[in-house]
Image (cartoon, rainbow, N blue to C red; front, top):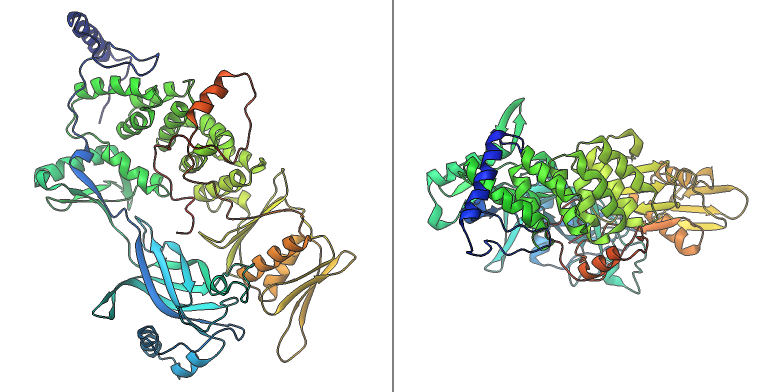
Length: 582
């Protein structure tokens, strides 16, 4: 599709025509009420635009719950024999299907426990994508703790109870892996917390969840379905086996299949919102008139978010220029919404504003970091790296996850998959020493700063059979105890990196390492900052009044803020990149 630039003679003639129409309108009054000092009143009537949102609504944007009854093994006498319930019957059927010998004896062992498994499949998930698993003991169970447990291979499907019978749907995923229980959970003081855990990235999707648009009843027709798909495909396409292909396919008079565009992989909500703001059968003249209105609306904080989204939906050179003009607006909201839209158009001009916002404005931080991660741009990459050095823990880790989303194989991230269990990163960056571990998304430990050491004395457990001990000097002994035989040992320095590697070398799991770090922090042997899931917080509100007062004052801006008072909701969808456990 070709678009008219502002330097094109045709465009200039159109602007003269607009001026003439307004002149002859005489004293009929302003056509559009000004909403800001920069607002213009010399606009023609807004054209009657047919947006996709008027004809169709999204399909597949909900989270789908999948469940199963399964077995956790490897417990240290904290399991139990489950009571004779329908859940136990389901588990026995599954064990027999897998040809497990003596299933009742296995269930009776104190080292096993029947568990309920649950997960939520995000919109647009594809075959092979990973997701977190929730595990808990059923009510009435005598299991006291799931710590050190391993979830056996489990088939996940949608489940429903009909006529007091549990019915399963199609298998949509498989799950397996070590169960991470809160290291601070005490089985005696808080038995509920000790009998639930998570298997990070332990699920693998075996069936893709489709996205689509469903035409509302009064607009259902083959013609409308084709027109909508055509409008979307003029704006978005992907490459399949090297061939250019539109993202939408009209399947029926009421349904259009949508392929998730790679740039929006971590922001499905925004993708569908952009699609719904695409105009159908719009002439070039009508689009030019509409863009005059969007230009004005972009400069008003009350309408900037919607205007930026619609300019992103147009996605041509002229809309980019309008968005770039918004970057120089004196209002933070206007600059942010313009920069966010430009980022999803992969325009370098967005980087400076988004970096400033991510550093200084907590309300927009989630969206700003996600937008930077969606770009294929060297300036965006460099800006994210610069944020790894700041004081704010959530900004540092948010920048790290954004870099990971941008390129998981980036050598700078030093990704190692220790013992095929968890991701391990030692970053050579300045700034405060920090260690970050996750309880969601994927098993991962990140060391911000290479030279980090434990303070002695140190004596902590890493799981049920590994002891980390160093009383004085500059050495630490990591020992794995066995029921029958001499303990296996590794002697290392006080380096946190060396201790982690020694635990893993002795068979320690991700939960074991997290437990050791948590106990060391509680005992004062770990002096580095220790953070768990320090994600940029979604749902914060922007204090527009305070921000305006601050902009008018001469006080310097504070950096690395982590909280903001509530005032106005952020108007664009929350990205999936920083999702917390549901």
